[in-house]
Length: 289
Image 1 (cartoon, rainbow, N blue to C red):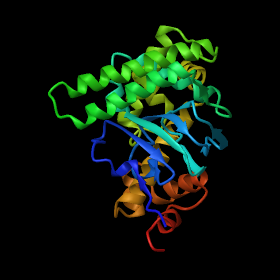
Image 2: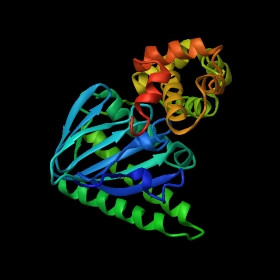
Image 3: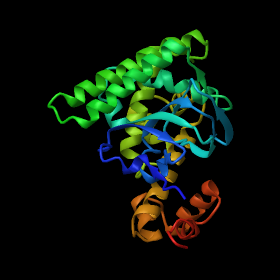
Image 4: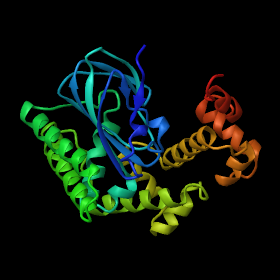
C-alpha cells in the first residue's frame, strides 16, 4: 500500500507560492491548504492520464495539456493512471496582487471560466518545454532564501503568464475586456478578499468602487462568467469549510466569524450551498470516523 502525500506538506508554501511534481502517489489536495479561496493553480501535465472534477464537470487530461484552476473552484482528482505525472504551481492572490502582471492573471483566468466543460489548453511541444523550464526554475528559487527571492519568483511567474497569454489568443478563447473593466474587476477582487467575512452584499462593493450594482454585475459576468453573489458565496463557503475542518471553533463561532446574523442562518446557507449541515460536514471529515 503506497503512502499518499500532498502539496500541503510542502514546507516552502509559506502562504505565497508553491511548485512541485505530483503523481499517482503524491496528489494535489487543495482542501488541505487554504488555497481554494484565494489562489490560482497552474497544472502542466507530463505523463499518463488523469480524470479531474472541475466546476461540476469531469475532464480528462493527456500529456502536453495545461489547465489553470482559478480561485473559488478547486479541482478534485478522481483518478490517475499509474504513470501519471504533472507539475503544479499554486500562487496566492496576495502574491499575485503584488505582481506587475496582475491584469494578465485575470485574462488567463478567463479561459477556464468561459470553458468550464473543457478548460484544457493543448500546448505545442516547444511551449510545453518552455513553461516546464520556468516551473523548474521556480522550484529552485522557492528553496532559496536570498533577499531578492520574492522579486525573482514574481519575474518567473510573469514569464509563465507571458507564454500562456499568446497561446490563449491563438486559440481565440480569450474574453477581451477594456482596461477600465479589468481594473474594476481587480479592485473588486481585492475588496472581496479583504471584506467577504463581514460584508456579504453587492451594495458594499459597488459603493466602494463608486459604480452601480448593475455595472459591477455586468463586469463580473463579462470577465468571470458568474455573478457577484456567487463570488461572495464561494468565498464564504470555502472559508467556512476551512474553519470547520482545521479549527476547534464551534458552529456558532464560525457563524460569528463570518458575520451571519445567527447560527440558524449560517447553517441554512451552508446546507444550501454544500448539501449538508455544517456539523455533518465536520463529522464526515474527522479522521478515523
